[in-house]
Length: 139
Image (cartoon, rainbow, N blue to C red; front, side, top):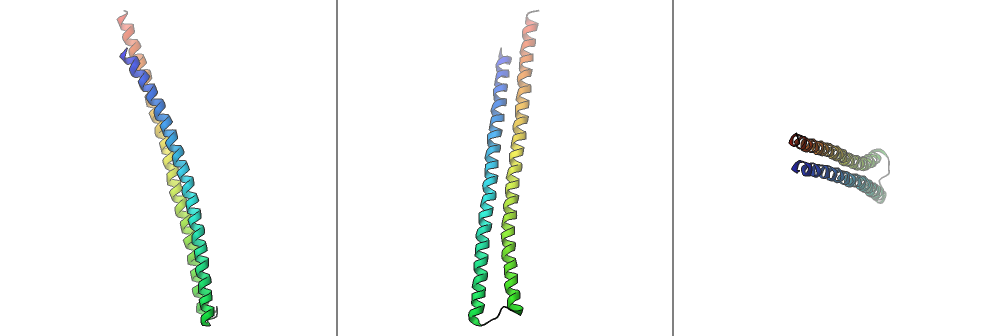
């Protein structure tokens, strides 16, 4: 009788492991989406700040009488490139973090499926073992 109870417990444990892994994977995917959205917003803010900084540089040049030619233009152009690179780096880092979180979700699902399969195997093994004991008792 104990084998059948153990088998039932294994089946229940298998289902619980599968449900938990699906839930955890769902949370991880939601976190990945939030990570991407956060990176997009951070990149947008970086872009706005970069444009503001470039505007201030232009205004400063204009006030001081510097024309946007030669080295002044080169400095401004390099600053614009650096600001754009910052924005792109933020987006890329966010995408990498989101990808890592998504990979964690996939691993979570595989672990849940493996735990479910193992629980099913243990459950069926318990049923067979219990049936075997009953069969040998009746002989």
